[in-house]
Length: 123
Image 1 (cartoon, rainbow, N blue to C red):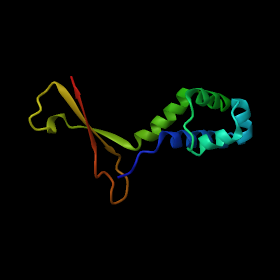
Image 2: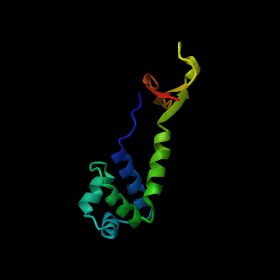
Image 3: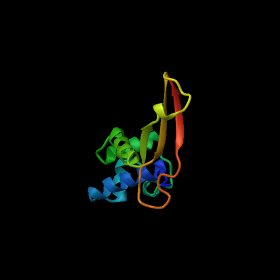
Image 4: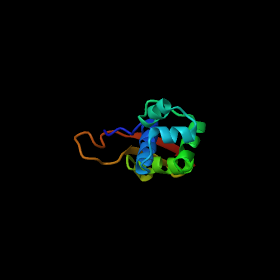
């Protein structure tokens, strides 16, 4: 089964990609965001879980909003998870509720799609 990425790694990768696309150094962005170069490096490598205040500052230094960062993270995560509605497929289940199964998106490999988590939501 393909694992979803940790949010701190995903956020770090997005921030690094944005910084590199702008041709900027860690020092440039860290200075603008008022964080240390070492801390920004740890964030970009997914080793530190940044606070929302730090994320806002780094995003601002990169000319993006926190919503932009979260939207990019969402687009990436959606590629890892698909939702399947199994309401009619659950024996003994009457109408009035919804059953969704969250499972990894189909990816090449021997373990792809072999397990799922079930979420029940009553109407």
